[in-house]
Image 1 (cartoon, rainbow, N blue to C red):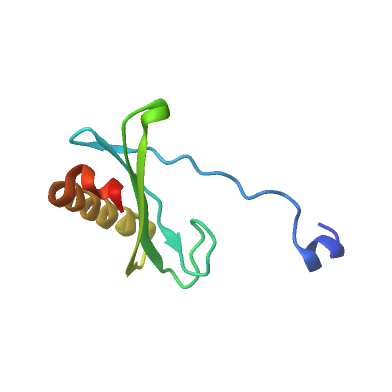
Image 2: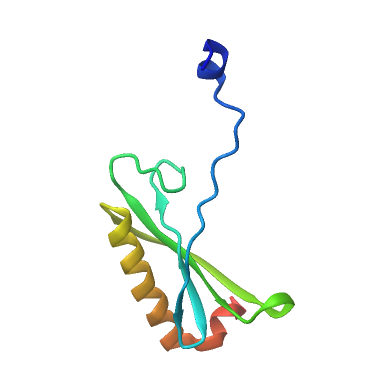
Length: 101
């Protein structure tokens, strides 16, 4: 890498990470933790914020609810696990009304 690239950063786009969803009661849950510092899946200081999305339906009729929690955890695996538990609880408590917000 040349000094110009090191100084101003690379022009390469960040690599997209494919997240495999977890199915729960017909909903799909995608755990997508946010690393502190803003870079997706690259933690600074080992802290990951709980984040993800819940979807229902297919094609043009798909509904999506995204959320970010204040919880911070020390590794990505723990953040994914807690996100899934919180998403399941949200589905149980609110059902399809989560898409109204």
